[in-house]
Length: 376
Image (cartoon, rainbow, N blue to C red; front, side):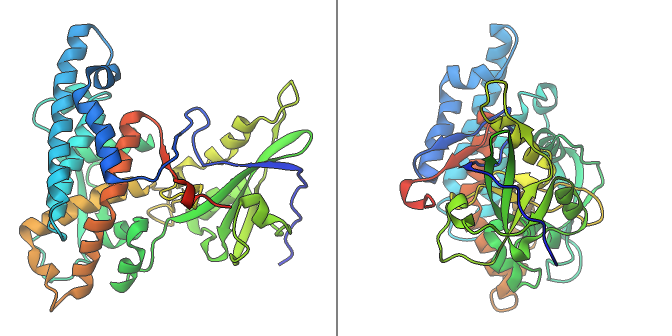
């Protein structure tokens, strides 16, 4: 296949993928559980931090602040307790931590719904015959999960929607090899590299993906509306700040450009907005090596966003249900792949889930990168 030549450019900047109207906060140190717990405790214990989330009179703010800080305290206690449990049994505590974090997050946008008796928003019936988890599904109910989904994606999730487990787990990047071990394939979200390039008149984004990471189905159609594959340019490693040891990539340039501002400077916000038109299939990076994550639609035939943060939340709910009602599916003699998969979910998802919460409560993505992990 003969690919078109890329537009020539003379300058560039590496940029994390994000909403140009809401830039992320960058940390010059790596993410760690103690660091994020400490920052979340500010929300639980410092009135000026927690109370500023709410509007209204001081009395109204104080009423919501009372609920908010106790949701946070409950969540932090459960999370801290989960750290001491060595295997998938910790998912029960992690889920109740995430449930309370979610209530705190939603208290800003749904105060009347969150105060009082609140349902999980997901259900699972553990009575199905058989020991494989492959046939299990979650059912969306009225409650926290569809509210959280709407708040984070801007889309509604109808009550009664089925979420098959074998589709959800591959949407979690941290357990790709364990997902492959149970026969469901490796992780579907793919890390991407992203730069904004410009010449004397215009700016535009360019994306680097693994050759095997080209999206298909409705995800691919949306991607191709905004980007087209072009020939590799010789200095692509320098542009994306990558080692010369890396190979096997494809380059995609935006189909449209952003004209320079009136003073002649590049409109980087406008160039970022071109990428952000695909926000339904994008997520913030979860490691410093990448600039963002390409998240395929939950179904290939229709657009159904399922970013990793929501997949982690739903799967943790499911794991907590298995721990309570169906622990035999984790028997190491009979189902070692499943046992290892859910041990990995408990171990590998704890920190990313904490970052998900921290970003949500701060109102913008929190991107961590210590000096040793930065690209060249």
